[in-house]
Length: 143
Figure 1: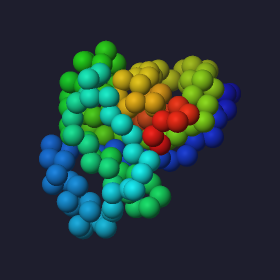
Figure 2: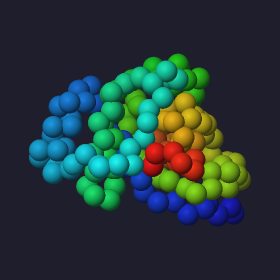
Figure 3: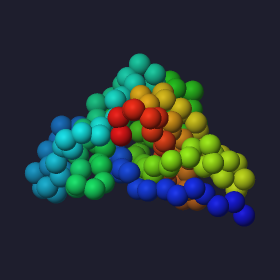
């Protein structure tokens, strides 16, 4: 059986119809704050142009994304990461991780840098239909 390269939890993406309302809730009720740095730059002309608020508990980012059920169609991808949200992991070796997915027979949508500048992203489903993201950040890109 194939062994995946080491992954670290990077962010949880929650989907909402009202980004400002969700941001206020997670900031005011849950005590999350906007990170000082390390935020991704969105590629709003390549498939997903929704609003996103970025918050953090100090360790894990929370991305509050505007729901867009058509983003996958516009980007030409089967897996849509902003229809119901997802959990995201970071890898330092995307090529090895893709080889691992291929070896274990897990189909994925390779978004490349269609959504975030400098991030290679793939999305796939767990056995229960939950969306999982794995991404690798290019040297010099925002983390």
